Length: 116
Length: 114
Picture (cartoon, rainbow over the protein chains, first blue to last red):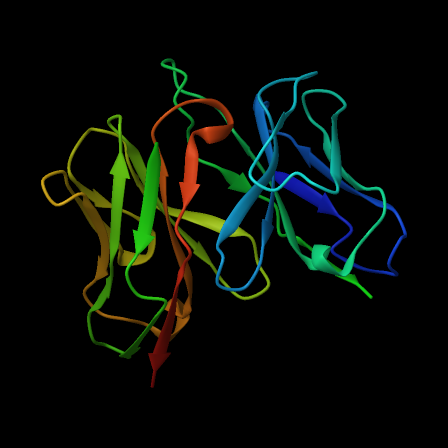
């Protein structure tokens, strides 16, 4: 019963390096999300995908790219990491109701990224 | 447009005493409302949700919340705190579709003193 799986759990990068955070869900959900969590700021949406092949910018997309590879997988890429991207990153998925309303989010355990 | 305000960034209670975490929201649509809990170094887990059925919602671990439309509130309560309740709690409003559907509160950190 895996739910949402994120890798890696921890990563340290130097400024300018690139990396990809991987996320996979096994609940057959259409919608997937990437959030970042910073102290005192709650969760902020980076990117959103309503379905395979579609992505949309969230509140804080600058410096990130995403790929919705298939229904299960949604990856987040940092092309040139900056210290301001030090954060905890969460992937989530959800199914929508018949009215299209967003339902419960299921979260991964987070990826803790430090950029030096 | 929608917004969520968690009125307390930190709440401290003694074990065995009641818990009250306050959440106010605003929304142009009839919202769905959620409370999530996050234990240290963990992801967020759903505690309970309101989706236009009963206004008093019961969740896991003895938590409940009451949707009050007239007060635009969705406060989280528990009659008796346990040490294991120490965590961060997020109130979330869902009032649309797509990427703008969900808005998170900034969180309330609950401390439980022995």
